[in-house]
Amino acid sequence: MTTTTTKTTTPTPTPSLKVLPMGDPDAPPGTGSLREQVPTELVQRLLSCVRATGGRTETTRAPFTGEELITYPISTESDVEDAFARARVAQREWAARPVAERARILARIHHAAFAQQAELMDLLQLEAGKARYDAYLEAVGVAVYARYISRTAPKVLGRRTRQGLVPVATRAYELRHPRGVVGLVTSWNYPAVFASSDGFAALAGGNALVHRPDVQSALSAMWVRDLAVEAGLPEDLWQIVLGPGRTIGTAVVDLADAVAFTGSTAAGRTIAARTGPRLVYTSLELGGKNPFIVLADADLDRAVEAVIRACFINAGQTCVGPERILVQRGVYERFRAKLVSRVGRIRMGGELSFDFDMGCLIDSTQLASVAAHVDDAVAKGAKVLTGGRARPDLGPTFYAPTVLEDVTPDMGLCKEETFGPVVALYPFDSLDEAVAMANDTEFGLHAVLWTRDTRAGVRLAERIHAGSVEINDGIVASWSPDLVQGGMKSSGMGRRNGKDGILRFTEPQSIVIQRLHGLHPPGSMSHELFTAVMTHSLRALHKLPRA
Image 1 (cartoon, rainbow, N blue to C red):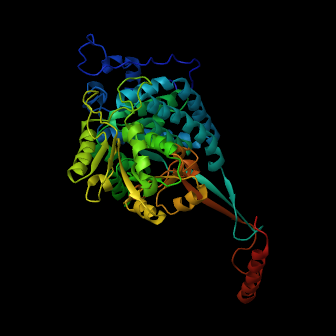
Image 2 (image 1 turned 90 degrees about the horizontal axis):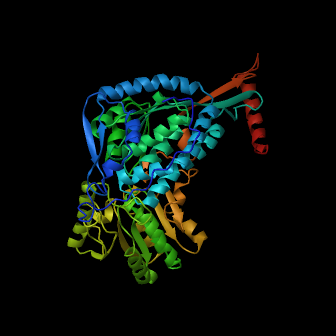
Image 3 (image 1 turned 45 degrees about the horizontal axis):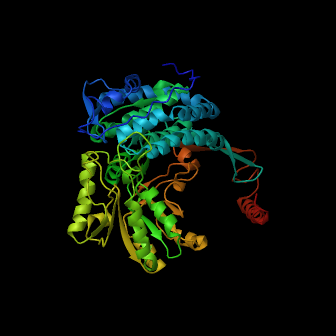
């Protein structure tokens, strides 16, 4: 595929595919087979970029039906070494290009992503089991990140004048250098968005990528890479390797000049332990046990709808999705009734259409983990208000959207991340109690607060130990590409998005030009006289108006 041309025609969108549940007695032979309906040419093109020579393969299953979907080539550690070698060669040429030229390629990705979004939506549903609208939101995210980074990078990566020690006598400026080859390790739940938010930012900074996406949704991640190549990105600049985290992921981390990881807290700690001795910059977005706080003056109907959007998007498999609903006692019963009624109306299904609100969990392991949390809580006295069970009638990994109450600290569901369509209700009395409950967790990724008094809400939000807090929304506002996103405490370190999300992939360098004498007495002036003159001058500078 050429790296110097872009498509000039708008591709015909992939038609939506209606998928019947497995074992449907009314389905004719072959109807509903996802593997048969994945476009062969597209799969072959995407798989061709994987660096894999060992002959080993891994076959994924479609979450909607459980049938085999894609057979992936699996990389070896030698393949990872080769990927880094190729990326380093490409990176040197890429870093020499002006940032404006790099930005123009990202701008072309923006337009192409919209033109081809139906294709990505299908892949996201097939691989990750998303509802159609959830897939749409992720597909739009690719275009939004391309636009934001293409416009922001030239503003923040150019040479910037800084204040020198001695006005007039000292001239200073700051440059930004790429870190080199970034090891990008992304998870299965938002494969295209993570490839875009971290990948585009690293590329804008003049870096190359060796990317290890999770195999389960690797096509969706590689689709973003393919779009970038079509827009003019050199092919060797974005390398793809596939395989288990403990081997291939580790190899990527060990060879990278910087690491960007999205995944579990346990894996994040392991990565930090490996990169620490090498003093390699590491960005980690990890888990959360996010609170959703409803004050007595909140608009309860709007707050309930926000719970539906924030807690059950992507079947609850969203790191910033709230799992703890804290409700002020005066409105607790009213809110509970409204929420239970609304959750009961969520439409679940596995079709590539907009007919359903929620899809399924990624695989049987995640289903078992979610079910174990709920079953443990119920066995210890928690009450299921709605849901609380798997839905094998819909497919092998569907789990009903669930609301519980009377959850106590001895239950895993209270403190541990569930990562599924499960929320628990907790009443509180005072605002101080709400803050204490919200902060009573090892995590600190995201929080939501609902109140009509936004001034009081801001004051309350500032007391919550989380990387982002939304007032009167759910999670969408926190995904603005201009707002930094990341976690405190065990939810990670470093931030994506915003100008900081771009700058993290660069090394700052200060360059100072001293025009006159520096910090030494000129000529025959004594040190005593020189220090007196310096002190007088510095005091005078303090009185000058700030620039």
